[in-house]
Image (cartoon, rainbow, N blue to C red; front, top):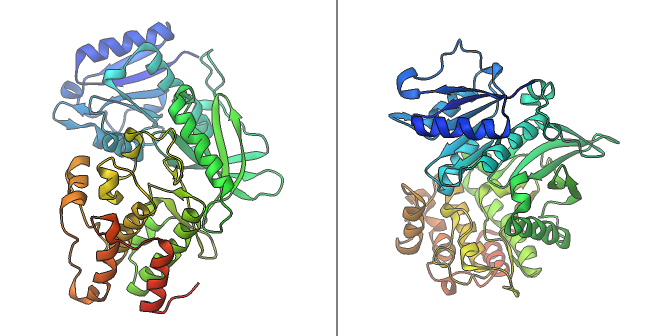
Length: 412
């Protein structure tokens, strides 16, 4: 069956270019160009299931491509959507992928090979995801296989997506135990830096013997993709709990548990560098575990860690020294924990902004926010965690735990 593509872009030259690129790889492909300025949003009565993939521009004249993405993804039969964007910032990419894009292509990187990889990626990943399963299993475009099977595991559904990997809920065939499978995107398999980070995460987690860190069960390569099989957390993440509201006592208790986790991680000579609510998960019994060591570093070994890498991380939780591209130690994770604690107490992040640079500049320069009167008893703690100079923070996670025990009567 021939490939069928819906191509939505307000620029005629890109519609022509993308059509040509698709047909260079699939000569008999059907490409339906769509001018959003003249034709508007595809109507609700339009059958999107006739297409195998949608290529959607980020900027659609006066229209917002992200809004179109959300609307189209909500429709029955919508195929996977690949976002094509001239705005290549990490925040735009993550926003698009969280809104439902299965991949993205910066226009500056657009080529026959890159576009073909994105389309094939959409085909393969969609075959793993039951949301698209029926649509994709009936298709074969004569390139590579369109399904992924990992020995001994049965995929249930997609539960997470990022710029470098997709995460699926799965179960062991032998006993039904639920696990999470982190699958690297195929185009990154040829990127030495991304492979290094993926392998680093695996080694770090395997080397950590802590109940506060997600356990790894298995790993391997399938269909040109590296994967890690890890512990699945039934209780969801801290981000969801913050959205639901967390009481003061619970916030202090969770900070203590996060401190215990950081103590184990730091004692093993590892700095996380990307601690955030999304990476703090909960088991069914309420205990927590920390995920995502892809940008972690060994505290006593800087080999291979470049300044560019030191800026990796999430701006809302980034310490001033990390934002400045300087050397970091365990206290950078304590700063991130302080941001999380502030957010647990107030429901909002201490520093917001219109873009990445705006946020990190506030972390660098603005004073620590003053808590409302009913939270004043936590101001000293917040001030120490969010101190601009690392030397003014707690010396390490153990000192933080001792403070919480003495001040609030907490214990392990």
